[in-house]
Length: 66
Image (cartoon, rainbow, N blue to C red):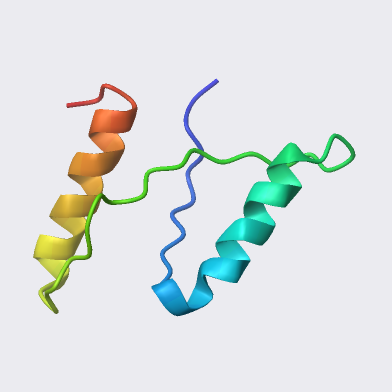
């Protein structure tokens, strides 16, 4: 099975939503899964290409794609 094809980004102010997703994943009655590819540190940039590059690098490391 391939990796999920949806990317979810969030800020630290939305961490409660991320924790809710973790709870869904652990609930045996909810068919929900995702791969955690959180970045090790915040990206301090507004450059869309740079941000996408950093996200792709992280996803690639998680799944041995790069």
